Image (cartoon, rainbow, N blue to C red):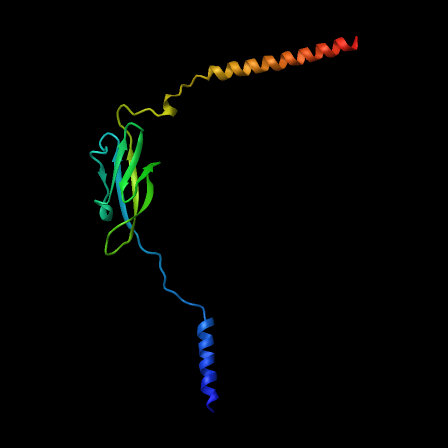
Length: 154
């Protein structure tokens, strides 16, 4: 009779071990923040500030000498495109992270030209001359080869 409780206890333990674990893990909620960096207005001395939970934690500016938008503070990165999102740490009772969306605005008047803007629509003459030279070389070699073979047959 004493063995019966041990069997039940063993069965309950085995069922507890092999039973799939159920967790209530949820993806942590993130705060939503945004920032708009205007090229004419925001520089390193006067940066743009983020909204909501990100305020006073992250700043944005336009670096005129290298023509880039950057964020600094809790994240140090270059902003590659308008509307780019970053995940940053925040100090809050509700959230541990925030999703920061950075909007960029270029100059309205007198827009800065990038390398793509400064390239002209005219074809590159160096490449054209190189192609012509290469074509003449190939044709000249072909003519020389044919002439040599013709002379050998005589």
